[in-house]
Length: 479
Image 1 (cartoon, rainbow, N blue to C red):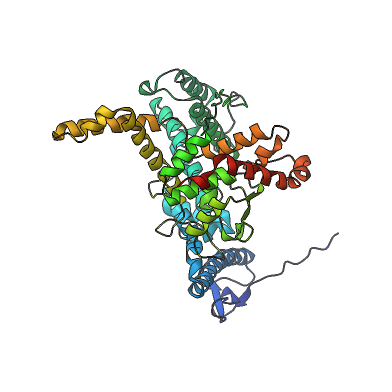
Image 2 (cartoon, rainbow, N blue to C red):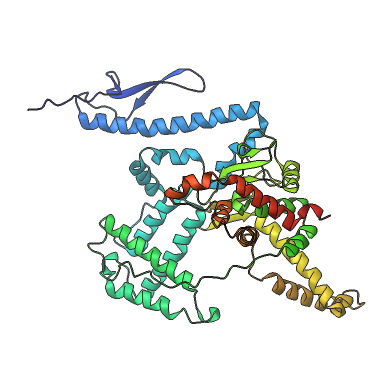
């Protein structure tokens, strides 16, 4: 018969207090501290009490280490003020005290129970409402710990709110009442709204697909935690299959880019240049670190934020000049931050569960497009422009409202900030038709493993393509 190995105990017994304890040296002060752990008044031979004390120690250790990391970061920041913005990044983006996450960072089950007890102590896990609340709580914790974006959490919330409303209208409250008929009716309802107009309650195919996919994931989650005895048979791989028409991409021509660049502020010019030069998104720009930039060679090397694929881009002279002008002091941390010192793009979850999204790059771009649109509208409608100088205040206000409405209509052409990177990629495809991989390399799309060696060897060709784009857009000639 095999001999059982005795488990080594990491805690020591404190006879006077009839409890377990742990000695540890603080990484900040260097002092040794004895930690006495619950439960108290137990026996040394009580194995269940020891296991509970050890579990309490792991949770407490996580909180202690989180506090130590924060204290050490503050000490480092006091010696190097340029690190303050980087140190505040996580708090600004997550909008949560990291110490609140420590309870479930190493022991997720215990942390979830603790947070559920304090925030949602009355959750009824036999009801649809209660299970949706518990499901969203997990998604919110994922967002607060950085495992997913707050935007993804908000997507889950809005889609499940619709399903909850649908069930309420049918008088279905208990999760046990969710059957094939109910979810079949829900899918039929979504499909029936596709041809309707927005004012009549119509939805897009993308919205319908996301709603059905979210409901499917939620019910599978309920089944996994045994809240549902079985899944409806029509909740199969085809349940969320909705055909979403592919949108035809819209681009900015080189002339249009020059026109916008000429009217832009220095900051907005930098955002445009980074998008055209490196194919950067708003989040790529907002998360650019000093470690990513070789200032001497004028090269950015970093993983793309969305795909995680490593990319490398040679900066145009105009891009490098603007980047140096607006960059924070290095050598670490974010290269670009807002006037308030916070990241340019950040999201957080408000106490009511709704999302708060700040995108300074998008706001700057929208202001620029509206400004240029107003100039075009005034040039095309000289009679309205002249009315702005009329002696009648009412006439001036009417003309201004008319011009503003026309400008907003012109600006809403479906081309957002991301159209810059798509436009640059499209120009590479047209110029380098014998090298179709270059556009994917420029955008850092995920490549198959068998192509990895091939892509790594062709950054030199990408640099040539980027140089071609520099001559094509010729932003340096814009005054």
